Length: 190
Image (spheres, one colour):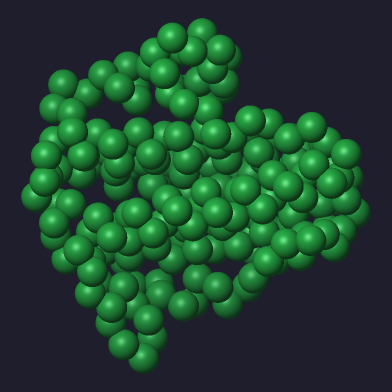
């Protein structure tokens, strides 16, 4: 595996946190009733969809960190009923995911990850659950994005490209997140 691929996973982790920051910020404009309202989607509310993202992040990030939480991660399908609580928890989870990706090396991308499935242990090369987790987040954020549109709130753009030319457009959000362009792209070993 090349060092460039390691940087790609790091950038995905930062982009994931940035997209969550944008989406959850927009959802903060909703009332609690609007947040809980039934909508069209696999998990039929913003509350359920966004909590599902958190719960699955918890499951996989724990495994990627070497933890053994397993299916206990989803014992409570809505661990955070209010958007403020969920936003704080998701931001913390996103930092953990960034930490996992910041620690990657080409050798670690190839290491075996043990995933507790309760009745069995799933063994995967590290890059596979990483890619699954990233895809899972994108998939369900897209559903939440559509639900937000139906709630009368202008959804934020989530498919932004981290182009160098557009750095000034995201600078204020990076300040909120405590990042700079160097945080995402300036790693000398990347």
